[in-house]
Amino acid sequence: AQTVTQSQPEMSVQEAETVTLSCTYDTSESNYYLFWYKQPPSRQMILVIRQEAYKQQNATENRFSVNFQKAAKSFSLKISDSQLGDTAMYFCAFSQGGSEKLVFGKGTKLTVNP
Amino acid sequence: GAGVSQSPRYKVAKRGQDVALRCDPISGHVSLFWYQQALGQGPEFLTYFQNEAQLDKSGLPSDRFFAERPEGSVSTLKIQRTQQEDSAVYLCASRLTGGFEKLFFGSGTQLSVL
Image 1 (cartoon, one colour):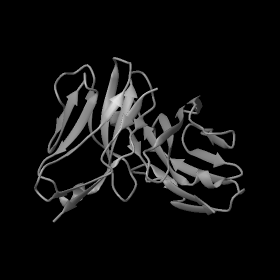
Image 2 (spheres, chains in turn cyan, brown; image 1 turned 30 degrees about the vertical axis):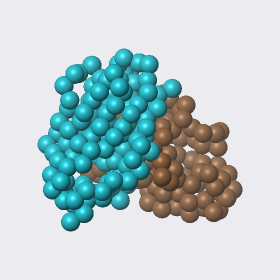
Image 3 (cartoon, each protein chain N blue to C red; image 1 turned 45 degrees about the vertical axis):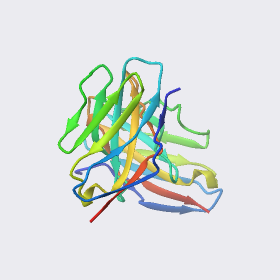
Image 4 (cartoon, rainbow over the protein chains, first blue to last red; image 1 turned 180 degrees about the vertical axis):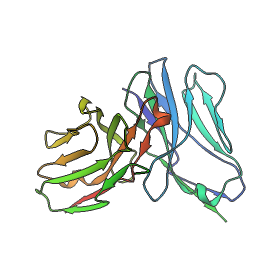
């Protein structure tokens, strides 16, 4: 079974600084997708960024980028120029190719301080 | 509506009561998912519908949990004889077509079983 591990329960960063959230996963599959979701207090899960395992190039979305290390099974999220609105829970998630299930980690609570 | 709507937002039940949680997906969305998010955890997959067909119910934790989507639109998650361990946020998500980048989540129903 696939597992996703987020080892940082809480992180904090100063506004405008950069922060990196860690995620590792375990799978024997070669075809899979990785995601970072943001969950603000409203509870609505919002997709931040996704990465296809077959792509070597790291995904980027504006201030958000990932460091995908396939051999190490590591998928970290870097948030640049942190903003107060980035304060939220962040979940790393995995999906096996062809599956309709998302497997989530336990999350990291990120606080951006003014 | 503009997004996935879930009702009620909060539900308090006495142990042993039956509850019904409603999900109104985005109009026309074919796929519908239910996830359970216990306190301090990431969401866990419960079940998946494509139109009115329940294609995967492998995540339902017991036979007390039942989900339906009779007309391929609104879905109801029913929990019979609620127990304290059922306390969680129940998230619904819908998608027209495509991958998880096209998935939209609702704000969930927070169920507290006393």
